[in-house]
Length: 303
Image 1 (cartoon, rainbow, N blue to C red):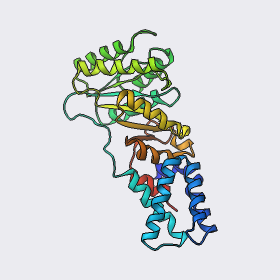
Image 2: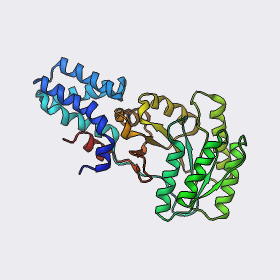
Image 3: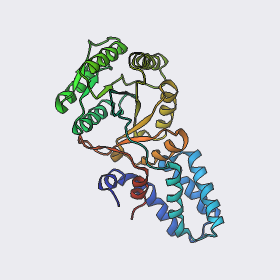
Image 4: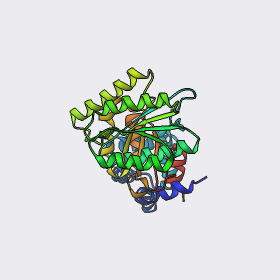
């Protein structure tokens, strides 16, 4: 079954990726070396990256040889099978605790849609009847706190904030105490958008995480990295460095609907082994959806 929201979200990627493979297939009848070279180039251009693209083509060649397939028209079916294999089975969604408080730490670079993603996650949790507290841990930008306040008011969540320039770890501490006192179901901690190359700012995230761990054993239950699909391969480098600093448990991939680089999901799964848990496919509150690898592959390769 092709999911309508995914069809819309992957439209640009499909044209730039599978559309080009379909053109390649019509130009070649046989699966020869030239076909595979051109296929590898298409995969790299689709932001699947050189390493994963080479691996995919090599596996494709091996499978075609084993099954004695030399008709190019069968290549797309084989490629879809390889991509499904890389992405694995359906990933578990957010790790929400059945009993007690769930703490979610949200990190990412500037401009990825981090605060908006927090708002949409909060909306989804509120739809499930969860009591949510937000921690305005981005104390560098007054606008970030205002944006988070607006979301909290809109979806019916509580918010804990301090003055601009306050210690973000102190905000996280206060928010955790508030969430426990209110018997909240979920605490979501926002952090300042930062370049992943800034060591001092990465240390600040580590400090926030230490405070959460100390004050509530087991926290954070999720550390979500928000990445922008339109950045392509740069998302891989961001994820590597944030994962090293904070131990990322899941990725929120935003702006998928505005990107022809939706293929970035594949190398994320292949090289990082961090699940993509949520994808952004529009501006609406409900447009941050759980990611399903099978639905992704089915939609990407749909006619």
